Length: 457
Image (cartoon, rainbow, N blue to C red; front, top):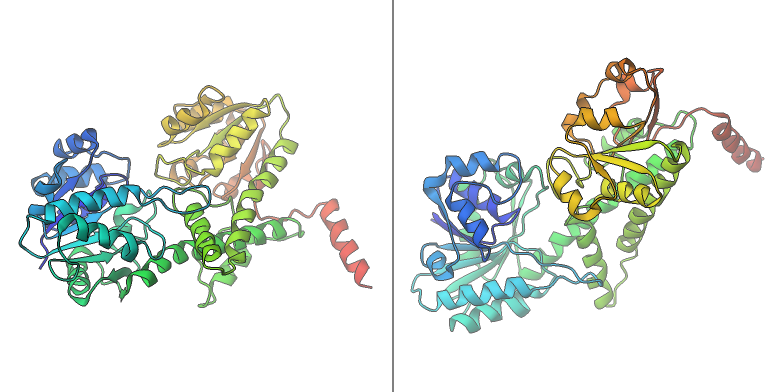
């Protein structure tokens, strides 16, 4: 039974895994080259922003510590999880530099360890990477053979920032690529004590697990893009309503409702790059990945359409507020954020832009610098602007009331990409409300529909 765990990499995922394992009664030691992260964990603080993480670390300090010493961590644990970055290059390939550095240090520590040890790679890698590069690195550094003195698993997580803790403790399923049945079985049993639910466990060889990981995210991006395509069509049909369409579409058991929202495109640190990685590996193998490539193109061009609509509806002299510059709610990550890019493009067009995000203002400031202004609160952002863009469906933004806008006695243009303010806002005389995926019954749309049917006669 695995009760002692080491986690290499105390970033946005690794810190959460370490805290969750400690909360489940396990002895956990984190390893990180960043002295700040190590110090924060040892002080009972969170090194990253994630809802619930501060409280979880504080409540489980007695079972959670951190170090920069690999030997200390490996000797004091039975299972090591590698959770370090695998950055992408311009072709879509993932770099193994950080993973292999970690593997060398883990292998060196294993050389002095007599007990059986499991090394599990959580970082996302390309198909073939574990068998071709990671296992040999561990074997060379340790002087031992995989499957004998130690076992290796590829065990990526499927989580969303802002909801990491729930995603870890209550996953939809567990994916394990294994070097042999001994380590795969031990890791499966470990998940029985780690998870609060009883998720199905899928065990397989390395290459199938590696492909499954990037395939899952690529499929989700395709689903998001399909819903966004439907939303664009709905906008051009008088009476079209994306929420009505996707509610019915998602009721089909073959499809499902999740990710069929129809809003802004996808962003963040995983979806765009995993989509590109699948396309890369397909090309490298002489296969076609037209669907993945088309999804990526559609996602990038979607933003052009939205920015054009915004500029056409908002006078150049108006101050524009952007709510939500993180790529999704409850995180400070702005990587490939649609809201951030909208703010950036409007500022580049000479517009006065003020942004607010309860988590990501500081992250946005490092990219946008002084090109935009930053509001300290939701109310301040709304008060300072004449046009408002709701770029992510943050719970705090849902607290806006049409009555509050009416009381200021000043018109407000609202682009609500997630339709979280529709009730009340659509029929308020002080608000010019625009929502993605709704087709207004105006004369231009009616004329287009008439011309389509006329051409059929």
